[in-house]
Length: 265
Length: 268
Image (tube, rainbow over all chains, first blue to last red):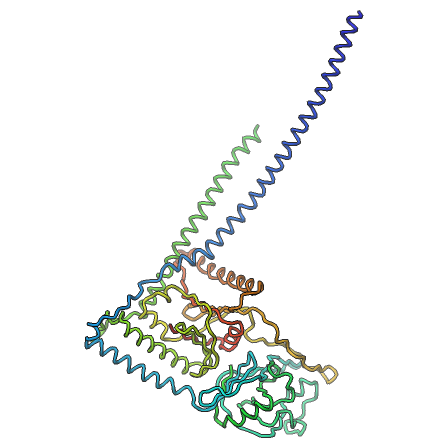
């Protein structure tokens, strides 16, 4: 009995110890399953990343190919070029000399025609983007400086009237010259300040001293004149006229005549 | 078990579908490339048919003359003058791009009013390496602008409402002239030729980014138009192009000064 009890005791110990071992085994298998789980997760993340990345790369490749590679491919073709030669025998040929003679005559005729466009008279060039002027005499630049041109403001009234204050571009001629000019104010000059517009013949329309010492008319009420707002020179602030400072205005006035060309760009 | 067999059935199907898609995309790219590669040839044929010398009538020209250096120099000079006269007579403000001396000039009725130095130049190989006589003939008449795209406004108009009375009146503030926005311009000619004028300044990242965006947008537009042609089995239109880089201020001046349907003469 005692032996039996001992044996039982041993077996229970063995059971206990075996029970401990199985507990350790369970913990080990838990760790392995955790590792496999994280491995699976990583695999999944990698798989998803690939699924996202591959279409992005494919689109990128597709666009790069079409937008950048194909235009390069197109440029491979240039057609048959010219192998320029200078054959002395050809130069003795009567037909050749006739052709060259005709070309030289054409060039002379066209050159003469082209030269008639560039005037030998004094003229002024006005750059409205940079608000600069260039005065030429006998095709030589004699003076340059700042000016003010149109502001590109569009004045709108509640009644639907509108004016855009820009300097017109192109070729103009000086149509008239005036000293000590007075300004005949148009409607927008009153509307812009919120003042009631007087009748056309009203003396309120005349304002002296604001146009400087000289004014040169370009037509359609556009002028080259002086200014009292000298700090605005070099800026786009006018209602379409070209403003110069007093010194520049005097030189321009004395250089240009009625009929002189004004090139505005 | 049934689930597993379904899964295993779906996977090869997916793979097959993917394979077909890849084959289709590659086939399209090859087809698109071949069609695009053929397009300059079509343009070249059109230009050659239009401008190559025609041996008609009694005065037949020895074709050797067309490769002679003296003849070509004189012929280019003549076409240069022809184009300039056509420009001076037909339009008020126009642009002349002189590739020989690398200048872009604004002219008004034959008078050069503004000149800009071209810092960088790229153009179609057809224009660069094509037959001298044909290309000079092509350039003997000016191009006319049909449309334009730019990163700045052509007319920077600002709206101002008129005050109701003197109490509402506010005097104008001094305009900010220090703003230097990037300026890149694309001019599309009536015959399809494209003239790109880019600003030379490229130091700031904002300038580079602006140019990249402008270029990408243009490439997308051009490619989309080519794809539409290719989709109906037509060879896409190839457009001759000239790309120049000049100082920012000059791009702005030229773009603002040119009329909407202005003219451009190119000399080489």
